[in-house]
Length: 386
Image (cartoon, helix red, strand yellow):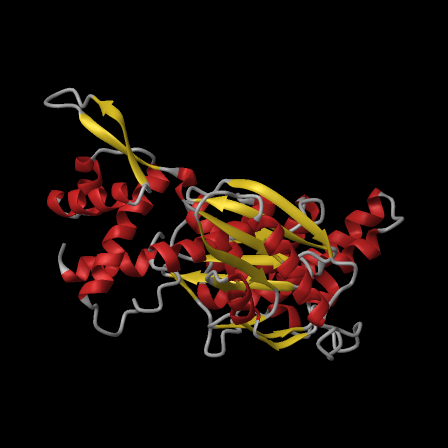
């Protein structure tokens, strides 16, 4: 595979691989890791295929595919699944991923009332689930709850667990440090390092919205290389993929739109400001405003929230020329009324050539998006699986 083609595929598929940017030299070990990832990605997205089909799809040589397949079979990650006739010549032997050959334990900390956890296999199936009520716990008490849920999930699987993935609201630095999470009262919390030490397993902590957009792309979504996802939960955040790259920003705070002030005279926010976007759109606050209202009142509240989010997103949509936004969060809050108001606000405030095709939809991964994204991060770091 020519060098430029290899770089192009790496750029497209290597969402979290910091070693593979447009700048910098590709080392031999990097190329091998990503050739392996190409094969596994193809099997996961397209299902069982023969060695010849994998060679055509990945543009790798037959010999290279054969070598990687041998290694993957020895590791128990790939298996042969009979033959399929191609009409002429010798029938090809199909290869498929052994879904439960490896597991990862994943947590979603984005919900206002509970922490959600699951055991996820190589193809994105959540094979076990557990939740623990938050009961308002923050700071060290919330950290202990994370540890309790993780330990509980680890006891549910006898399979090979390659690591732990956690999607947390707030700014998450490389190395699993939650630099700032206003709603959980975490400041410089070394969540990843502490759990790695206590569990003796690799632990990867990422922003929840970033995890959600990665989960959507890796396991369910077939959209193009540009994708904006807005996560509405404990707070409001965004995950942005451009040209196949997750955009994390200079301080790993890209997507922190929840603390953009949209109403200087609005309600106090947990961050210390007033009138932040999440004081208008966050799931818990919306539910408080909806409590006791009839259907007309509920629709008015949800439309107002969708309109406010659309106003906040319009400059982003215009700047990046995005065709759609994915919404992650409670389906009853982010329903048709909310989405219609959001789209109308964006179209009203953008150049017609930008806004006319703009649309908003719910994620295909539903409430599992953060869990699946956290799993994708673990599998990439620990197994080289994109």
